[in-house]
Image (tube, rainbow, N blue to C red; front, side, top):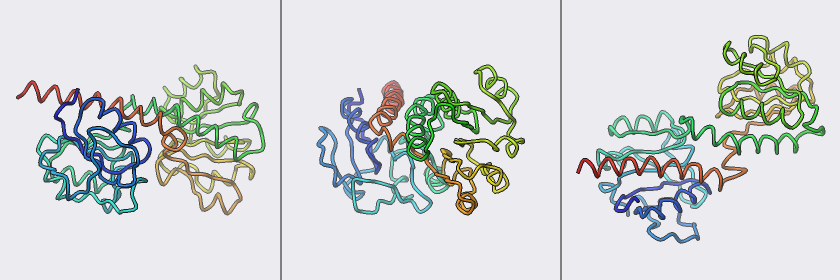
Length: 299
């Protein structure tokens, strides 16, 4: 239980509803900022503005998956007001206050550093990333079906990167009957691709590998699908870029050449917000409970 713990949840999308639901079940005191249009009522959760919240008593701040942008703006779908997390607000919190976010920006990292507050980036955790790969891949399948006129079965599918998402994508598309080849640049990853029964290739040979691709799924968060690479692709190929913004694709050149390229970060929150929210809620409740127990032991 989190009885007596004061948590400020600032902005977000439908995923935050699962977090709110889970934390109210654990008896936490919640201040909801950027939720004035939220119709659901949660016992123990109060809709407030920054001015209403006594940040001197806040034990944790939970931000959306996107965190705060470079000007401090926090995205929310539950308010028409612009929500800004200002450095002075973070400095008002107690020294033990922890900031939880999906990803961080230079602005948010600097805010936490200046206030000497711990910043936890949930999407860097292996457990969150692996769980999130499930709705990510389901969303990728959905987009592949929507934006092609062929079946996935027997399609030539290329996956770039064998991280948490890349591995799940390669395995799933192969299970659907696609001919899957996977690009990586480390010998152990190339060995793993072979062990999975898929076709491996080194990303340095990417230009040669894309000649027959129908669907290219990129998970590498740097420019890998350059103009030179896209020039070697069939014009009817589909690029689904799952990397975080700005992606790993030269979208300008892809459009010029007539290759459909879609940037699709954040798929879990789009295709399965309830599941994605439960993933975050479970991890957050575990982390907050650990902090609560630690504080109880120290007091």
